[in-house]
Length: 178
Image (cartoon, rainbow, N blue to C red; front, top):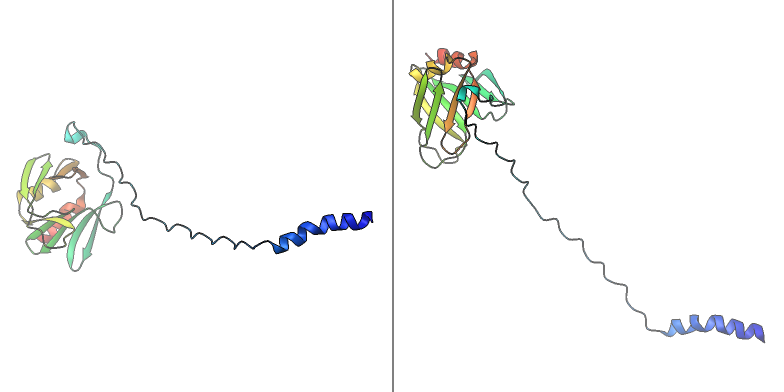
């Protein structure tokens, strides 16, 4: 008899739970979709305030090449998308291209050991990714860039200046264009 009572005591909860209403399994919650975010912009280095001849050079190197039949000197860390290019676009016409977007012609200053040359960029074309200045191959500013003592500076309004080494690639493009 004790065995029956014990057996009934163990089976009673199982039998009663079978009669209880079944609760449906919880519906899985979909994982939240990732939100697209942009990486924070790299901090802008502070503008150099001393003598331009003492400023650290902009990182990169000059490379000379022939692209599309044009003599081209490009400056940057890699050959792809250089921030500065000097190209002979036609015999007697040199083009300086600085990466950037503007909506109107923009002031550009070039400082060399021979002096400072204020220039104005060409009017931008729609979708342009560079600020362009077209110069005659015999423009004094080009000779000043080629023969500057060690470096020269290109300053575009609204951008940090580029302190560039005066390497032979610059003179090569100018001479190829004359």
